[in-house]
Length: 338
Image (cartoon, rainbow, N blue to C red; front, top):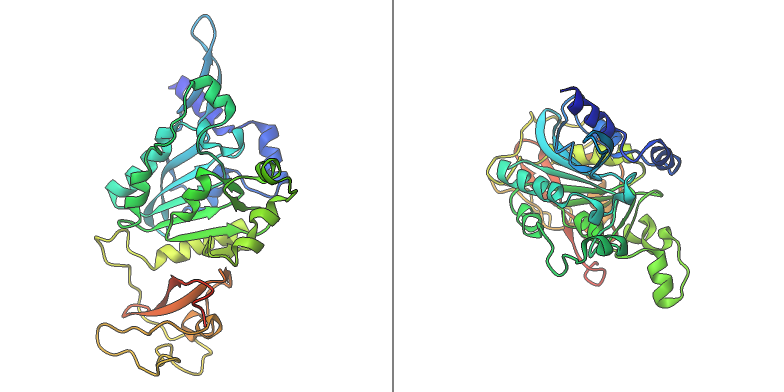
C-alpha cells in the first residue's frame, strides 16, 4: 500500500514543478485544478491514475514515473454523476501520441455503457504521431483512429460537452468539435488543425495562434458554440448546460418547479415573435427566431450568463413543462441567415 501511495504521489506531480509553473504563467489551470473547479467537492474518482511510464533500477526498485497525460474518471455535477476526462498539458503538451491511448477510449466507452454525460477538458494535440513517437514505435496508427466509433456513438446516446482550454490541434481539435456543446476560452485557447509552424512551412506565412485559431476566429465561423471569458466561466456553462439535460436518451430530463422570473413585464411563454403563434398543448414549440438579438432578450433567460454565441447560431425555443422554455441551438450558414 505504501508503494501504491508513493506512485499516486508521483502521478499527482504531473509534469513537474517547472511545467506546472509554466502552465500557470500562461494563465491556464492544470488538469487536476480544472477537475476540482468543475466537479462537486470531493466527488472525483480517478480511473487509471497509475497508468504511465516507469523506470526501475537493477534491484527492481522504482526510480522514476511519468503518468499518462490524460486524467479520467467519474465525478458529480450538482449531485449528478458524469464521466470526465482531461488532457494534461504539463506532460508533452497533452499530445495524444504520448498518452496511454486506452484511457481516452475507456472514458468514451464508460460514458456510453454507463449512460452518463461525458465532459472533455481538451488541451492537447495528436493525430498520426510525432517524429519521436514514430521512431520509438516504428509505425503509426493512421488511417485507423482507435475508439472513434465510441466518440460518434456517444452523440446519439449521452450528452457530450467539450471545452477547449488551451492550444488544441489535430486529434484534440476533432475531440473538441465532436460534442453537443463546444466551448473555447478567450485569450488562452486556440483551435486549429495544425499550428503556426506548420502554416509557415507550408505557405511561408507568419501567423500567431490567436490569428490562426483564436476566439476572434471561431467565435464567428461555427467551429465552436460558445466563447467563455475564462476557465471558471466555461465550467459554469458546462454545469448550466447539463442541468437542462437527462443523463442519457433513456431517461427524462430533470425537472424543477416553474418560477416566474422577477422584474419582467411579461410572462416567459409569450407567443413566438416571428409567427405570433402561442405554444399550446403538450407539444409546445416556436419556430426559429429570425435574429439572435430577439432570442437573447427573451425573459426566460434573464438570469443566464452572457457568453458570446458563435456567429452562425440561431435559437429555437422548445417548450418544457418544467422550465417553460429553453434554447436549442441550431446552426445555419451565413448565407442562410436573414
